[in-house]
Structure formats: structure tokens, C-alpha cells
Length: 90
Image (cartoon, rainbow, N blue to C red; front, side):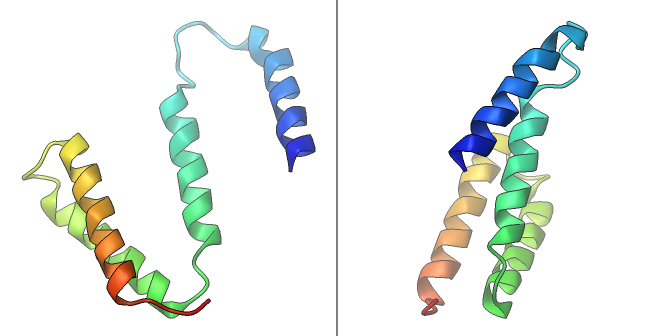
């Protein structure tokens, strides 16, 4: 894992000079992509898939009522509560 991380960092550092300076490839995109990949790799049971679907619907419904920063905290809290009360032995 560390070898892949170091290799990816070196490749990214090498190819950085070809990127334009207007920040079109922002860190927001990279962190969102990493988060999605982590979530997808953790979907190993129906219970976790249903938790993800419920939280996604919750976020979409509440998106118009709360600012994004508050919504992120609330959806994380909802996912935690669901996961806590639907404990599974993995």
C-alpha cells in the first residue's frame, strides 16, 4: 500500500508541470473520488447497502433545508446512529 502511495505521489509530482494554473483539478474532486471508492469497497452486506441508500435519500431530502456543512454533519450522525443500532458481526 505504501509503495502504491509513494509511486502515485511521485507520478503526480512529475506530471504537475503540465497542468494549467487555474485549479480546474481541485482537491475537492480528488477527496470526493477517494470517499466514494472507500464507501463502495465497504458495501459487503445488504444492511450496509440499505444504510447507504437511506442516508443518500436523507441528504437529498434535507438538501434544500440545511447548508452543506450542517448537512454533512447531520448525515454522518444519521449514518452513525443507523450503524450503531443495526450492529452486525462482520
